[in-house]
Image 1: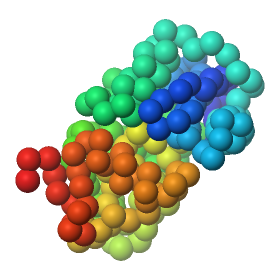
Image 2: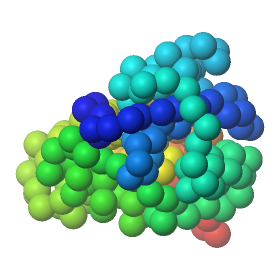
Image 3: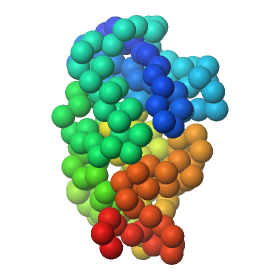
Image 4: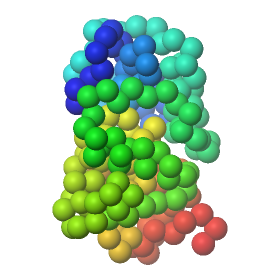
Amino acid sequence: MTAAPGNIRHCLFDTAFGPCGVAWSARGLVALQLPERDRTETERRLAAKASSNGAGDPPPAIAASIAQVRDYLSGTRADFSPAPVDLAGIDAFRGKVYAALRGVDFGHTVTYGELARQAGVSDWEGARDVGDAMARNPLPVVIPCHRVLAANGKLGGFSAHGGTATKLKLLALEGVHFDSGAPRLPGL
């Protein structure tokens, strides 16, 4: 990821999933790191991903986003669409994909192909490109890449530590389960 120009800072915080971290610029969140195998690795990955200038105290808007991430990972319904994000340096296609994905509501899912069509690409390569965009998502949970499924409702991959087990946990927080191999949305 190419971080936004300017002074990028980061901090770690504890959640029900383990230590997470965020990095930010003056314009908003630049990166979110889900837990790695330990706190040190979480911070190392976050600082490298965001090109952070070092740890810092989050400003109020970032502190509010941190509180929301904590609540979400504890099982509280969350809407991250108002969270300030700074996606400077993201190419136009990924920008379209991330914008469309931010519109996928809590407890809902979308396929790689559907997301590609929303970003203006309809061939099979578009779905592959969406998969690449998901793998490079700087803000998992805020840009909810865990809500993107493969064709026919299959789980697909997840690049965070823990892989698909982490994706399943995030989806379960939202009431989406794969008990029978296909996703079950809340209330179904």
